Image (cartoon, rainbow, N blue to C red):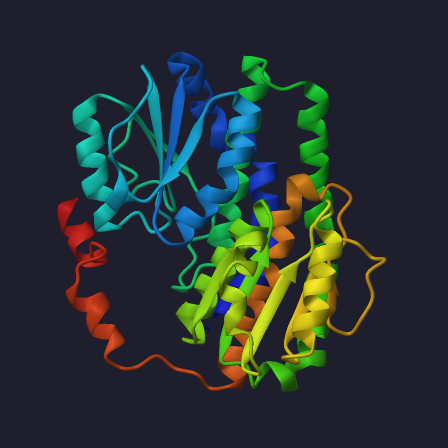
Length: 361
C-alpha cells in the first residue's frame, strides 16, 4: 500500500531510534573527516524542509562545536568566510537542481563539502568530498515529516560526535543529550496520542480555520516555520511562522474568527506575556492554542507534550501537531491543490527526474 503523510508522521520516532542505534556506522567517516579538516566556519545548505531543519540545528551545532554555523538557502549562497569553511549540504531527495548549482559554485572555491541525502547515492550525494546517509527510510511523500526530524537529529549527532572527539563538549553533556533523545523516542507513542486526542477534541473548530500562524521563541520559532510550510503544502491555506515578539509587531493585526493561532509557550520571562496573548486572542477566535512542555498549564486549548530536557529535544515534539493537522485536517476537509500547481513542478525544473538520474549512471 502506498505510504501516506500520516504513515510517515507516525514512523518518525522509529526512524530516529534507528539513527541513534546506528550512529557510529552513519557518522564515523564524517567524524574522521571533521577532525582532519577542522573547519573554522560551517555553512548548512538546504531548501524547503531541509533548510528549516538546518535553522533548528545551527545554534546547537555552533554551541557544541564552538564554530560559527550559518544556515543558507542555495539561491542565496554567497561568499564563503573563514580560512577553512565546511559546507554541509542537505537534500533529502538528492535531486534538487538549485542545490546542485550551488555545489558546483562551492566546488570552484575549494571549500570542503559534505552531503546529506537519502539514499547516499544521489546526484547531490555524489558531488561532495564526503557523503553521509540521511537515514529517513526513503520517505516517498512530498510534504516531509520524518525527513525533517531525521535531518535535525543527524545534524545534532554530527556535532555531538565530532565535538566529543575534539573536546568542545564534556562527556556529561554528550550523555545528557543522548538520554534526552532516547527519552523522547521512548515517549513517542504518548506524544502521538496526546496530539491525536487534542486534534479530535478541537476538530470542529479547526475545520473553520482559514489562516494559520505558528508562534514561538528560539527553537520553537524555527519549528513554527516548518509547521507553516506543512500547512501551505497540504491544506493550501495561508500560513506563516513567527518569532513571538515579531508576531506582536504587526502580524497580530490579522487576528479574526478565521485565524488558527498556535503559541509554543516559552519557559522564560515571556511565559506570562504569552499566556496573556492567548487569553486576548482567545476572545477573537476559537482556534487559539497553546503548546507547552509544562504540565501545570491547564485548559482544553492547551496541548501538553512534557519533556525533562526540552533544550535538547523540543524540536522533535513541537513539530508534531503542525504535522498532524497538515496530514489529517487536509483529509477531513478533502482539501486538494489546484490542478495547475502540477505544471509548476513539471515545468520549472526544480528537481532532476528519477529517469534522468538513472540515465547518468
